[in-house]
Image (cartoon, rainbow, N blue to C red):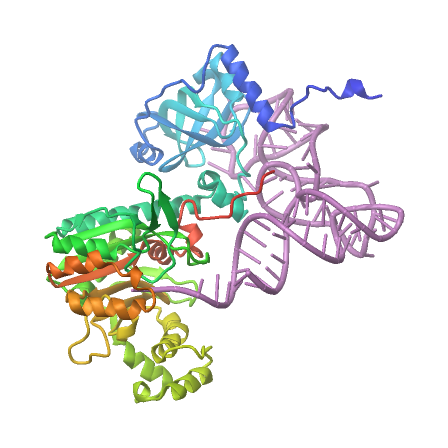
Length: 494
RNA sequence: GGGUCGAUAGCUCAAUCGGUAGAGCAGUUGACUUUUAAUCAAUUGGUUCUGGGUUCGAGUCCCAGUCGGCCUACCA
């Protein structure tokens, strides 16, 4: 009976429909917002920097971006637009922009992209602002933005629609941009030291260099199965054989394992190899690299660590301590490495570790390291000379052949960078592979062993998990916060 | 894989013991020519994740499923 009150064509509640209608009205008026062209002269931050203090309207700029807030006061309004460098405010006045253009401007929506030319001035409340002389709508947004104050908080939606997260959550925008800058800086740093960036295969017949479960795939034309690489190591070492003395790769690795706060199925590794260096040379390199990132990208060498409340100090010299010393100290047993397996297991349980009866002795010891020691190494610490069972690609120490010439750099309780004096004796390497492979001898990369037989110069090698490094340096809580599109289960059909 | 918590308007969140699903922002209409989460007036908008069940009555209780968070397991 109230039919006259409710118009069946009322779409005011449907923001998508309202925006589509506005788009059609624009087209009917002869304007295609998706074909317009503007030529911005400044990014937002550059425009703000171009303002000359005390000289309002002296500098003209053109800026472009997405409208993210609007305060409409009738015949004038303030809007803010977002671009790669941040946000800049525009002041749009009817009597400046024109009687004809102003009503159309008022119909723009949050989310639309516009280009604006105008002069810079400082508002009564002190914000440098563009006084718009003209504007162009360059792309219409047909869907509304998330809420302006609380942003987008649903983690599911933040990851699936990362672009929305980047638009409304400045923290995400900054963190992921910082990641890009860190990666870029690593390249520059290494290139300045004569390292060559190379690209090695992702599709491999044998997944070597680590002991993780690979993804499997198939090449149709060749009719062969491939695996996706789980590390970069073996192909980069082939480059040393080939005469490239300093090489690195920043690339994606793939491991078909569980997903957690610290694990994504695809993740980015840096691996660096330097001929005629060794693990001690890598210590200097990784310390210089991280300190350079701190100074040049983060602007500080002090990083807060959420887990411990401590402040991590990257400047100065870093702690260095042998693995065995840490174990002896934690177990309060100078003779730990001479103890029988049963004694080790009993002591480990006493310290609160879970001990699997199947474990080898080194696994019991390493459980103590990874559960009781590593999490408490907050300040940068080189843990050196790990037991020989832990890495089959490194050289044994000459004085103590039960340990390796390697280090593991621990910061904030996380493994940040392992480095080795690389094994280049083909016979020792083959023996290590055969021992490790056990029943699965087909997983040995014989082509790599052949390469070593051609001679590989002695070298230091080092790897950094870029995702975990960025977690550490940005104070992120999860690997999902530092990867643009972390892996999620596909959404169910609606 | 196991445990646990969660999913309500475009977004952020309420909803008492099982009893008429609400608010802010966004949207729509109107006022306002230096605002800062602008303000003021009016107003639209719901498959309460999906499917079953219990009940006179389910956002709320039960079962199953989907997706996600956290913990855990796997993980050089």
